[in-house]
Image (tube, rainbow, N blue to C red; front, side, top):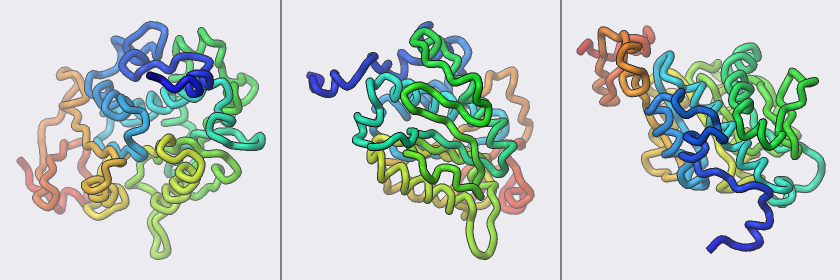
Length: 278
């Protein structure tokens, strides 16, 4: 039986992820979303509190940005279902609850994942409930109940001063790395600290990327996922994600070090030096 106090905290019933995807009054994705992307979202959110971190690796066009944007919209839906999200999580003050995406530069941060979130919050549920973003603000999304979505990059600290509920690291393997630091890892760790301190076991961190190096930050996260059940880590192939008539790969490559098969559109010069044509 649901805790009566918990039920009182909700203004609307949070839709389970499958219902959110499939019903005409939810996300509006039914009949549009690819089966593999739907399956992945269901695995991530079927128990909304099961995972803290989500790591998705795949080649160009498999739907990584779409997946993270749809995931962010579902998190926003769940926050907006609460009567008072700040009060529910025991947060004082007027600082917004934020979802932030970080990319390799400010332009990509605004254009790719942020653009997917902007589209996703046009879903029927948001319109029906009257939860539309402030149309006078274009630098970020300002939603009711003091919720905001912010684009940034790995050299920014935009999230400082926000109650960060979720973060999305776009192209996590492709951020700048110097002798002094890995910008992706440093930015991600900063987001992680803020999410975990304010929303333990509730907030989410996404890493989405195409593959790059054997021992890069994202591959280290895959290794960590082997022993950390709070991390969801998956490699999605084009032949899994795309309809058959869209899958144009003619060649595949095997990396014996990682026991992984890559498609032609996933390859980088570094990977070509490490793999065998199959």
